[in-house]
Image 1 (cartoon, rainbow, N blue to C red):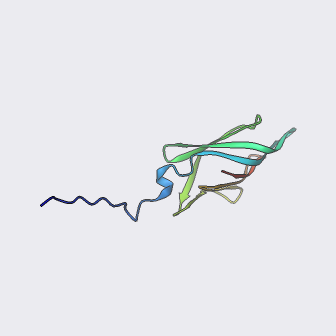
Image 2 (spheres, rainbow, N blue to C red):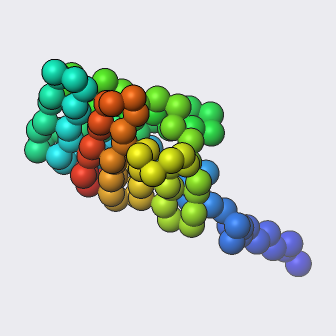
Image 3 (cartoon, helix red, strand yellow):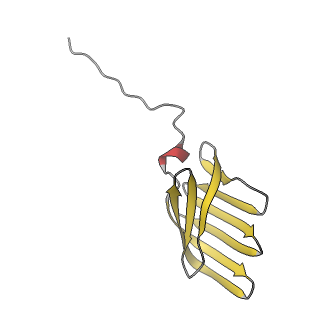
Length: 111
């Protein structure tokens, strides 16, 4: 008799822990800080996982957002912090409405 080997994925395997959200999202992005204002409908945001946090690398000369902490649910991650720092990310969609110290980043992007 041949022994059988069964492999199974854990039901507790959270997609957020598998770098599901890492990659490039394309769409409308903007940045506003004092006299600097950048906006484009053909922008890119590259999401990079750094430890337990995420970095958001913007195109078009927009400064990056780094070290953002998330609460991870089954199929999405939502930023932790006050209501002025909202980022929601899924495998196919990135929404950013982030305001810190008078500086605002926004994104409405798809992958």
